[in-house]
Length: 277
Image (cartoon, rainbow, N blue to C red):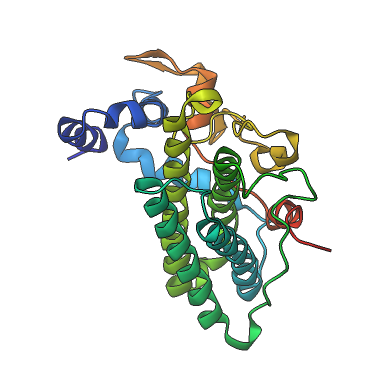
């Protein structure tokens, strides 16, 4: 059974699935069928090329360094959601509070796991300033600001783990654990985005994935999180030059189809916006 048949079966059970996955499916399908000589059976070749492009020769070479960098991000997220849940009246009761509480528990579990793996080599938790020096002064008094900053953190996490996976290739146990955490972060990012969309207003058109560039609506301070997400080329192919049953692949669809990695330096610079000197 090929990938497209799997998509169709899922769509039969979940009619909204095609709306969520369509841009990514169409881009991958057209990338794989851009030549009569290339079929879905050759898709692993493209995945391999994307992997080489993403990690190449610039990947770090220290596993503990990667894990500590991941731990710093998990410290940040765990404390953010812990403070949010503890703030009376910030998060609406019911499903919103339940969702944020679950995300908090996941992030705390990530922290505990990474500390256990690193042992005495684990870095200490920094002191955080979630207002980013006053930029988000209402982050724990305005629910919409809280969700927007949460989205920025989760999007950072997704790109951060992808950007450092290459170094972990030699350690399958650690790589597997990191990929599992990465998948959880991706689900968090999607869920936060859909929570924002449900709120309406300026976030009414929010998608479950990054589209092109900064779509948080909270200003240029978080622009570095989305640097490079306007890329439309994968494996040397301009996705917008492809066409299929749905017509030409738009720039928006092309940027939605692939998450771009962030370097460790870029991620730590982003985290530094929320760490007290």
